[in-house]
Image (cartoon, rainbow, N blue to C red; front, top):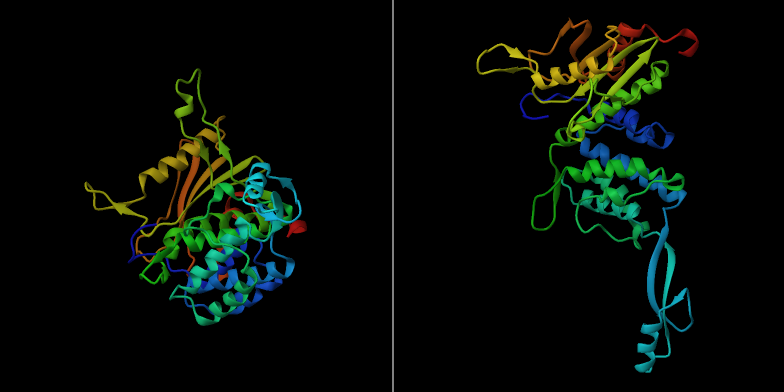
Length: 360
């Protein structure tokens, strides 16, 4: 998303509901406080969600993992470090140098939480009520270190059954830290353009998870689309993969939804003042549809679903290209959430019909 004057307005509470679907954890009772509160900005909402989530994790027990320790001790523990022990004896130190693993709360997962909470305490846009809750949580992180920078080392994080609740918390932390901008020498921060940096991901996953929850009969999923190659392919490894944002399937029909979150949608070209859809978006959805509909059945449709902006000209087109339906429209997020749900329901009904009565 780019630009500032025509950005899509989103009711802050709708951001919470979108996160509810995107993460699937926020619907739990413990988050009702965040759902019912009024927030002036998304930063406060994220701070409140993180404070509540971390507090709940503290009650369940912070994740612990084995950390390798090297210590000089009067008795042997773990593995004896013989060279270091000999050096101690030469210095007339009778203690043994030992190497051992100790189960500690100073895990990378907890370091991410602590670093993010402390960064929020330095953020001017976060209200005192949220900062107070964060400070209460930090009391339990005394034995936990911090990240060297406001960046999460994703490749080093592992999620298993005993720490799966951390997955949502780490996602929230990542959304916060990606938007952090240090504004003073004292380390004060602010969250810069939360929507620009985070909302495209939230928007796409919200739509996918909404259909997973409300229309399981459509088998919503990300789908890998295979290129319809003919004959031998030279340099195949250089051809990019195609993966849909959302694919819905039922009774031989398929709808591919490409979720787009931009500040400006329709653009005028230099040759023509008439505003048009971004050509790359149209080419992309067309490629998905035609390569998935290998048998040219016409049963695969494509939809460019843009988050509605404040612009007067918005996408509203529907046509048949080469036997397949291609449509571009907007989803209005600046309204009651029930209206948002109705818009998404109508998209599915238009192609597949309503959810069977027995499954409603």
